[in-house]
Length: 71
Image (cartoon, rainbow, N blue to C red; front, side, top):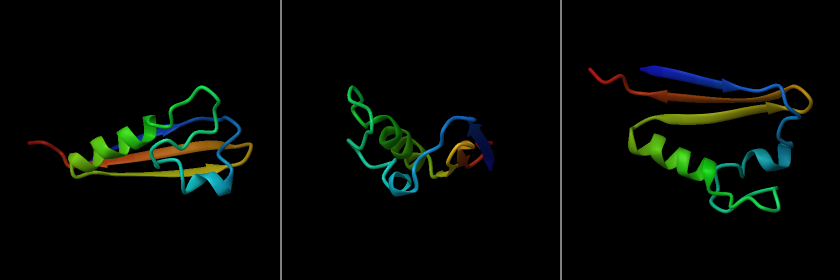
C-alpha cells in the first residue's frame, strides 16, 4: 500500500466540524462550495483506498490517504 500524509500547522478544525468535512456541500467559508474534500474522498474510494483526518485546535490538521500499490 502507498501512504500519503498531508499536514499543516494552522488553527485546526473544530471538533464539531471534524465529522462533516467529507460531506458534500459542507463548508465554513462564505465562498466555498464544500465539494473539495467530498470529491477527494470519492476518488480515494474509487481506487479502493482510505482517507482520514485528525485535527487539534491551534496545532493543525493531518490528512492520511492510503491506496493500494499498483504493480
